[in-house]
Length: 223
Figure 1 (cartoon, rainbow, N blue to C red):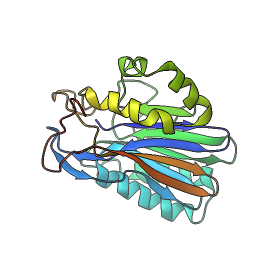
Figure 2: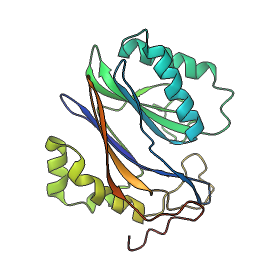
Figure 3: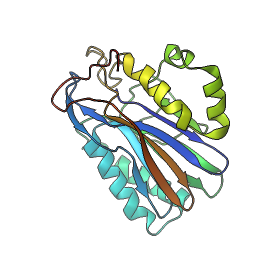
Figure 4: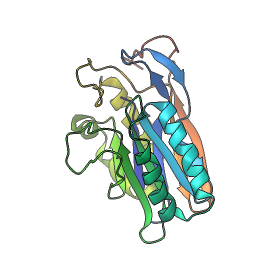
């Protein structure tokens, strides 16, 4: 599957995302920016799985947010998604990052199916991630990262850890959590984007690109 990392700091939220969109067999169909930023209220939305569904959810959030604060928007968005629970043709996961009026910087997670087998991850319900969420990494991947870089990321942000982490994630084929019967594929590619979200807006910087080719599978070895 694709990869992302989101961390809430005291005054901002940072996200790392790759750019690969691909078929279940790992063939790239597109390379694109996966973060959708909403200005009012300040929100960032990304995810894995059906990009059409994620784009649609972001569009609905933008409309709802025009008349609501963050907490109200999140509640209204959850209801709007749940009302369409029977019409999603493909599975997806999303994270919504923003600034709660009650809790400050927060990261919320939702999936369209019970793809993790965890009781707390009820489909179509936003889950409090505790301010941090990583998708696409294994414990072995994280352990391979320089501990000094990991420590720096907890204080100074995700820029320095972005390429080493995503390179390590990219090198290991991952399973599709929504389709566990399929063989693992190399699903992280295209590029790495670094998003910094504050209550005043967002900046997105492309900090790395890979020579992946649409129409081909990702060849992660040595790159």
